[in-house]
Every structure is written in structure tokens, then in C-alpha cells.
Image 1 (spheres, rainbow over the protein chains, first blue to last red):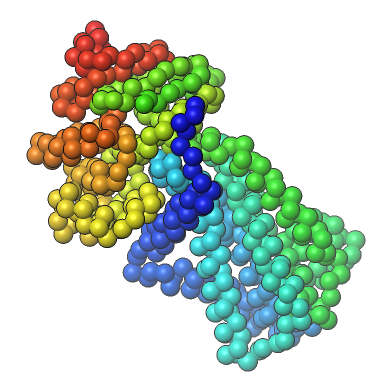
Image 2: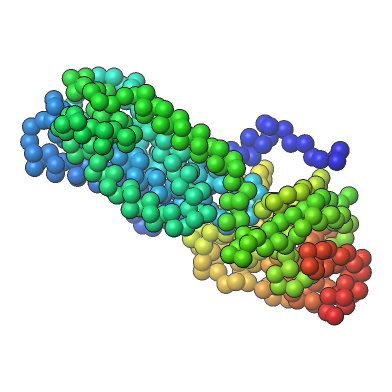
Length: 264
Length: 216
């Protein structure tokens, strides 16, 4: 077997880059090919996040533990929508790109990462739009700990992508998983402290909520913006460890199953 | 210069337990001339084909080759119906690391002879036009071996002749492996045959001999 063609790491990386770029363009072209185009991609999630936050702030004026209700909701909504929306969408990247696996250069992980990148970009644009509206509405506030906020956001995305990877693999082996997961993720919207604060709940019931890493992300996100809000009951360590575990689980699961994914 | 299959085992899971297509298969796949793969439905033609192209991997064993292979060119592979012919061409070009995309694009448009409709979504194409596009995309990239899965069968005689001529030009340095059920098409393109039967491969250096054995 001396005559195996050796391929350098650099050239492999180059091919991988061009594959990802091609997939990215394809994703944009196929997802936003109607007349509304690319704008709809981020206007719709923005309208949802902004609309719900704004309506909530109209219903109940004042503040929640020192944060204006509108900002309070906005932080929660951005966090939860950075998980819920991409979660199922990115997970379906494995099956959606199946016809492309005929090209040996296209591997499922590229499809997953590209899809995640598209979702991530959309969310970043949504956040920029949200900041712009905050500025225009004149409800600006100094961010207490921008670095923590930045860290949390990206940690959350690593968790989202890892969990999408796990869901994607699981549902390509057992299609039923997707239906069941759909039932379980819907309540997450209401138990992840988006509409309320952990501080509103008596301490003896906290353990019913704090198992959920999203609670930690949401509450810490608010703490990162307003120091006075406090970080009682949540810990960065928990969020970090949870992310680390799902990340390694996703990576090992993918490593074990990627050849199977091609033909599933 | 061959493709070497070593201890190849491939199965698909099913409700009745794993269905084995190949079990510990050892075979040297000749590539000097154009080879047709013959076999009954479900014998494993397409599976073997996809494994050669590395769009699928065996459970156990290895496929060794020092040749560059095309993707398995079938009617629908890699073509997105919402995207235009040009966009699809560029996608395939990018994936295969084509150096100059605009030259490639032009060559494909020229070869496929679909004119202005190159800029319309592929879903508006007839199956013949789709086959032309896919074949043109493939033949304009240099590979050592072209894997073609009935993609040419829907073309009209004129296009088929063009396809064959293009492959003949390439035949000096490139080989062809083809799956088809239409014997006249196989006679048109191939000179030798491999028959898949019960998970075993048999090579026939002479195509007619192979076809005769297959027809029995």
C-alpha cells in the first residue's frame, strides 16, 4: 500500500474551507430565495423578540429587581431564542443536506457548522437591531460586565450547537426523537426565567428550576448588565460545566457515528 | 493500477437484522478500460458504486486507490431544484476545488447546451436537461475515474454521442465505471464488465462475454 496518495493537512483545510463557503452560499440561496429575501431572516425573529418584550413592558410598567421590564424581557428572549430556534433547525442540517453527501468532500459536520453559523449570524444581527432600538427609545443603560455577557452568549451557542448535534444524530437513527423533543422544548420557554426572575420564586423551590442551564444563562445575562440584580442561586460554573459535558458528548457521538450518518 | 478492495463488509440495518451486501470481499478492481457494473436489483451495484466514490463507507475493510474519482454522477446528486443551473454549477465547482470558476462555468454552459435556461432554477428543467447539466459539470472537472450512474440514459442520441466523445477524449488518461440496465448504452460506453452476484464480484475482460453471463 505504498502508493496511497498523501494529502497535506493544509490542502485538506483549504478544501474544507471552500466546501463550507459553498454550503454557506447554498444555505443562503435556498433559505431566502423568495421576494422577502434575507431581510426576513432576521426581521422575523427580531419582531418576535422585540414585540413580546415591548408588549410585556406595556402590560406591567416599572421594573423587575432593578431592571426595566423591557430590558429584562429582552435579555431573556434573546437568550431563549438563541437556544430554541437554532436547536431544531441546526439539528435538521444533517438530514437536510443528505443528498450532498454524495460528494465525499461534504461531511455532516460541515453542514451542521454552516447551518449553525447562519443562525448565529442572524442572532447577532437581531441583537444589533435590538441595541439600536434601545438607543432610539432612549432606554440605554451601562453594561456592568460586557466580558461576562460576551462569554455567556458564546457559551450558550456552544451548548446550542452541541445539543443540536446530539439531537441531529439521535433523530437520524430514531426519527421519533424529534417529536418527543418538540414536546419537551416547548415548556422551556416558560420555565427558563424569561418572563420572571428566579428571585420571584421562594428559595425552597429553586431546585425545580436551577437544573436547567438556560436559567443560569438568562439570570447571569441580567446580572452581567445590572450588577444590582445579583446572581443569587445561579453560577457560571454550572453553565460552564454543563456546556463542556454536552460539547464533549456531542463530539464523541459524532466521531462514532459520522460514517453511519452518511447512509442514514 | 487498480482499485483494491480488502476484506470489505457492508450491511444495512433492517427489522430482520443486518442485511449483508458484501461479506469479507477481496477484489482487485481493474480500471484500464471502461467497466460496466452489472447485477440484479438489490445486488449491491449502487452500494459498491457509492463506496468507491467514498460517499459511503464500509462497515469493515478498506478501499485503496491512488486515483481521483468523481462523485457518483446520477440524475439528482447535488443539484438543488431552487437554485439556477449556474449556481449549481458554481457549487459543484467550489466543492471540487476548481481553480477558475468562471472558465468552468462557461465550459459547462457550453457543453450542456441549455442556453439561456442556465440562469433559470433547475426545477424548471426537464429530466434530460438536468442530466445534461450534471454530466457537463462532471466531465469538465478532471478525474482519473468517472463514476456514472445511468445519468446519460435520459439524454437524446445527439447528447449521448457528445458525451461518449467527451469520455473518449478522456479515455487516454481516465477511466469510466458505469451502472446501467440498458445494454445498448453499456455497449456504447464500456469495454469490460463486472457482475455482482451473491456478494461476489466477477470480472469479464470482454464485455459481450459478461453480458452473456449476466443474461443467463
